[in-house]
Image: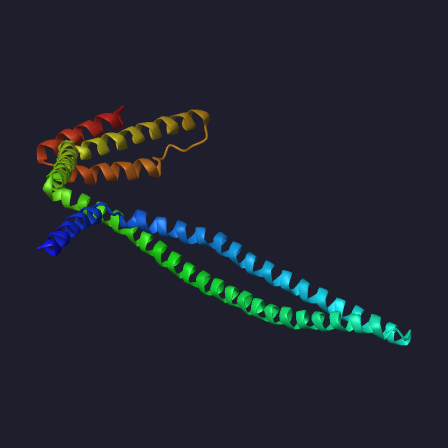
Amino acid sequence: MWNRFVRAIKSLFGGVVSSMEDPKLILEQNIRELNDQVPKMNENIATVKANLVMIRKERQKYEKLEAELVNKIKAAINANRDDIAESYALQLEKARENVVSTAEQERFAEQAYDKSLQVKRAFMREKDRKIREAREALQAHERAKWQAKIADTLEQFEVTGLDATHKEMVNRLNEKTAMSEARMEIALDSVDTKTLEIEIDAEKMRASDLVSQFKREMGKAADAPAPAKEQATRKIDISLESDSPAEDEAARSKTIGRQKE
């Protein structure tokens, strides 16, 4: 019974914690923690390196002491001072033991230092992999959020009636444009363009006659009708033939009157 109660409590609080967790924030925190581990690891490696350096210096000190004691023993023997040589011999024996001991310690310290460097390299590779993986997941999450917003906007086109309103307004503008174009075509069809062309040609004939008159007064042209005048008259006659008989007669009378003038 107690185990069931504990399991229920754990499931309750576990669900609350799970609902409070934000994967994006947790991944960002993991990246910061991984980066924070690097200075700590460097500090530990520096401690191991310092221990190796101290042991190496101690070994070198004992080796130097060993060399000095050997020289002193030789000097005492040359001086026939065996008592002094024996004293130095005991110190030499102790120094050699220390050299062997510190050399062994140095070997272990070097192995520890190499091992720590290997651990750091493995950690850095794993850290870079996890950070890269986390950043890719974060970027994918941001893309998914953006795509979700676009999807919501597209769905709102239909939900809020935006799509229907858009199509309705486009159709209305197209109808207004078509109506304006149709009114323009009707207005152009209602204008008597043939009469305007005739009047324009008549104005050209009048202008040609005035120029010919000036030329005759100046003695620079013959009395023969100008080719432009004949062509304009022929064009007017052709245009008049296509109209109704009544319009034909009126236009012909108008043309004759202008020629007399």
